[in-house]
Image 1 (cartoon, rainbow, N blue to C red):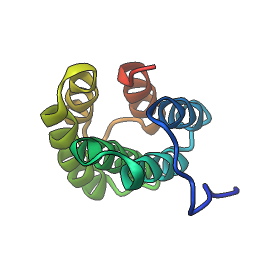
Image 2: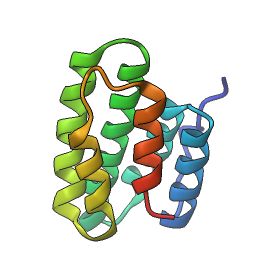
Image 3: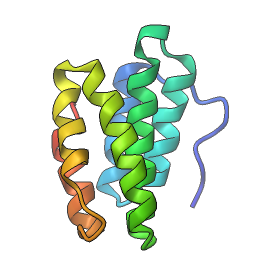
Length: 118
């Protein structure tokens, strides 16, 4: 699977569109790379949000790979950052907080995707 280029510097709209596309394809690690790309180029006041979204997506990746404990750690960290940003991202944080290490990975991805702003 091709990776997101290291110099990828998306706008907010592009990051959300690309991240959603990768999640729809069941590729949360690629979505993580998209959100990480935005985190690196975002204004200072948005960086924690994008870092949080990236952490949630890495948590989804851990869930897919059977590492429930690692997933829970990343969901917790990412959820806190998304919820501290608030607004349209609060539901993403709440959804991530509701996941357990036994949640079906496809269902977890679908839940996050449903809450992610368009």
